[in-house]
Image 1 (tube, rainbow, N blue to C red):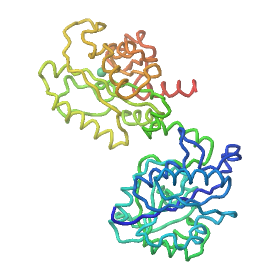
Image 2: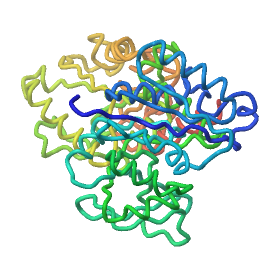
Image 3: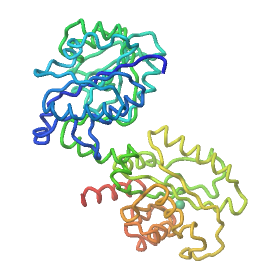
Image 4: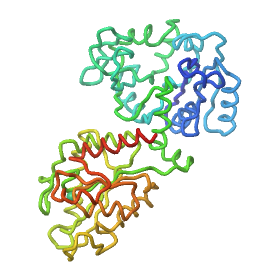
Length: 431
Ligand SMILES: [Mg+2]
């Protein structure tokens, strides 16, 4: 990195809503998947190449101080402490550290109450691509009255900012991460304000750009949010998953007639059409912690009707349609073997459903726990593949061609949405 970047981590919040946890530890050190929230930010800033970083401390400051020492000893980041015996407010903290940006080109300001997969590098590149001195992270919120609501033009220029508006004009919210030029840092400090949201941001309207982040970004303010984040972190941060030794559960999805509309020997991307609730179902399952793995018999390849390359193009189109709707599969497995038997229940090849091969391989390659996984499909061979692989259940779609065989499945559902509801319903019930 050519430029020097410093970072101020605002982490002194009391965490009142997380009592009694915060009676014994500072909020920023509460572990999420075995790692303190503060450490997620330390790692992200170290990865960004940040040189000097500072964190403010208040309650349980001794614990944070030990954490800071450990970080310094590890050599990851030159982290220092700013002690606040009395809380100064986010802008007040910067006012008390007016020189912190000196010698740096930019300062990253991090409100450390969020668990986030934010691409900080992408945000810094964006900041350097425009001429304004201030970049603010923007995330979509479903609670605009509880957030700072930002209005931007097509170039991301911030045209309006309102903290906790009574009548919100939109749902783009302040994500609590800022990148500012050193001069702007100095300007903020000299405002001698109390709160960044109420006092400072409105004064940068017209000189500030918004960086939109559609990935994961969650405020850990309540017990429910914390519990959710702990669950999500194992999925979001692969290193956490390994550390926690917990395997993911999965939903294996058949392709034709399940995730996309059935077309006899589909051979061209123009024929790919997601079922109406396809993307939403995948999104909901993944949000609930399931890996979504597509497993599809592609006898058309074995019969010479399409090539492996044709199939790749078809799957690219399927992935594009999913991604346009905010969904994504974890993996796709296909079996090119053409079956010859008319017996739908016979395993002709381990990989060809009803053989369990694709599911077993996915489990090995993606660290999946089959016993807590599901199979959804529209054919008996799907149901049996799930059963042969040792899934906890297989769901047969009743809108498919083999609904008469519903008794072979552990459950049946009208369509993918109903199957998703069934799985998520059971999840909630057994939790
Ligand atoms: Mg099918």
